[in-house]
Length: 405
Image (cartoon, rainbow, N blue to C red; front, side, top):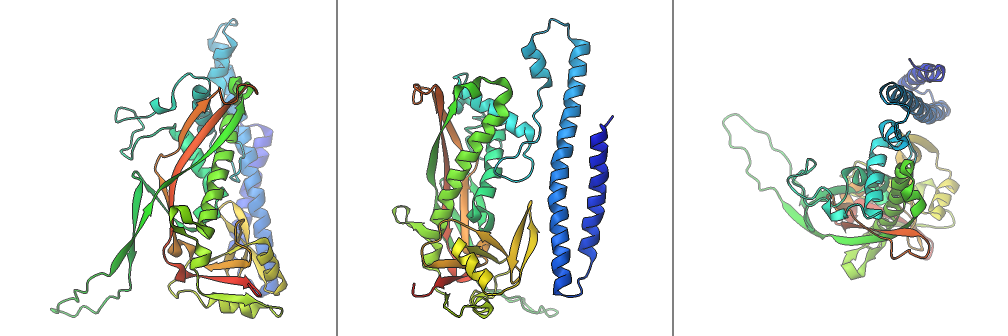
C-alpha cells in the first residue's frame, strides 16, 4: 500500500500533468503573455522533475520494506547480515552529472563490476568477451559491464556539448566512413514515361578513431563498502565522462594537429564582427549566413558571447530541452561551452549537419591497479574510450567574432 507521502506526490503529479498540458495548449496573445506562459511552463517542468525523483525514492523505500518483510518471514533470526543485505539491497534514484534520476540497477551493476576488478576478484578482459556470453550483440569485444557503459554514455551525452549537437555514430571498428549526399531533386513521373535516372551525387568523409583516457583514484574504503557500489559507479562515470567530454569539445572546436583534425572555428568562413554598435540586427545577419538547408539550429556561446547577446536587446526566452530549460535566441537554444578560442564569441548553425562524432561501440576499457596508489591506500582505475570526429560541412555554421580579432 503506498505511503501517505507517495499518495501526495501522485496527486501533485496529476495536477502538474494537467497544468503542463493546459499551458501547452494556450495560444499567447502577445510577447508578454508568451513570456509568462513559458516561465510558468518552465517552473512546472522543473517541479515535475523533482516530484518524479521524490516519488521514485518512495517506491524504492516501499520495495526495500517489502524485501525486508520477505527476509524476516523466510530466514531464521541467525541469518548472516551479508545475505540479508544482498537480498534487500536496492539503491534509490541517484543524481550524477546528468540531471534527472539515473537507473539504479545500472549504477549497482556498474559499481559491482568496478569493485570486482579493483579488489582483484576478476580481470576486466574476462567480462562479456565473446559469443557465448548472454549480452554479446555482434558489435565487437565488450570489455566492461553493459551497465557501466550505459551509465558512461548517459553522463557523456550531458557533459559534452559537441555530443549533444553533432550527429553521433557508433562503430565496432577503428575507422568509419560518413556518407555525404549532394543536391538532388525529384521529377514528375508522367504516365508511361521513363523516370529520370539521375545518379545520386555522393561523397564520404573518412574518420579515424583515437583513444582518450583518464586515471581515477578511488579509496579502498569505498571499494570495500558493500552498500557503496552505486556511489562507486557515480564517481567513476562522472570523472571519466567529464574528461572524455571535455576532450571531444576541445577537438570539435579547436581541432588537433597531431591527429589531423581541423577545428570547426577555423573552418567556418562566414562571420559577423561584434562592434561597438552591436545589436540584434548583427545577430540576424549572422543567422542569414548559414546554408539554407540547415533545419535544426542552435547557438554555441562563450561567457563573453552570451554577455554580448544580452546587451544586444534581443528578447531571450526559455524552452525545455530534454531534462533542462535552455534560453533561446531567435528561436534557437543557447548552449554555453568552454573552449571557444579567444576572439570567437559564438557559433550559430546546424551542427548535426556540420559535424560527425564516432564512438567505438562498447569501447570503454577499464583496468585497475592497487600498486599505483599503494601509499594512499587507494586503487587507480584507467578508463580508455576510442572516438573520432570530423567537421565535414562548415558551411552550415557561421561565427560571431570580437571586434579586431
